[in-house]
Length: 244
Image 1 (cartoon, one colour):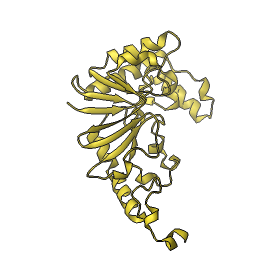
Image 2 (cartoon, rainbow, N blue to C red):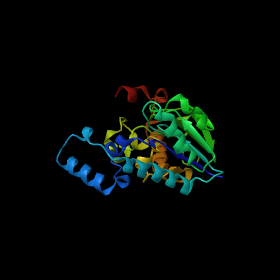
Image 3 (cartoon, helix red, strand yellow):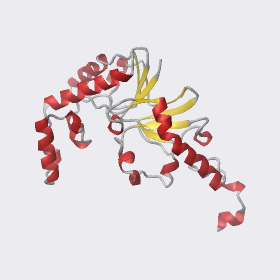
Image 4 (cartoon, rainbow, N blue to C red):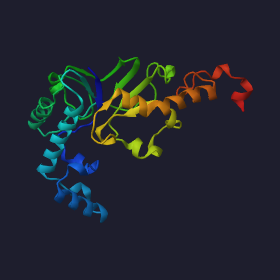
């Protein structure tokens, strides 16, 4: 049994195909029309993808999930499960869930999730901290600056934060991260848009975050702080240095 993580599938959400440039799922005609309008600086808000492209996305995400997360594994989705208007929402969410082979699927509530889909999941939380193979992991749909026990984070004893919501923005544009020391922030967006539309294994996550955890340990040593993201530990430094 293994544990996998993902976020922001947005099943049945046509607009996510254009706003997050999910070009791989678009039909040839949709992709050509989208790229032409984008290149011309046209209004993308008025562009509508076809139902066929939406169907391609839904089936493509299901296939990618099932290729990695088996029946006896556990899958955590960190929000924004599905999309739908009025009476279609629950039907769409159920369609997507029913086609995933993994029996234990847990949900972290996202901003597009309605509580009516609670019974589709084994567990559902606004936020939770779990332990997997020695790693402490705080799960939230939204990125957080700091979390419980973050100051204990190290390569040997990871204490990390997984999130979604921003659709790989900080991976694509690191300068957009609203943190002074983002390179030492042991957190990762596990959304589909930043991982070739695949779920993440814990091994992949820890490999990706190892340089960040190393930088976090170095930052603590450099500043003489045990929790640099909250400024804790400065009182142990000489007053003259603090006033400099």
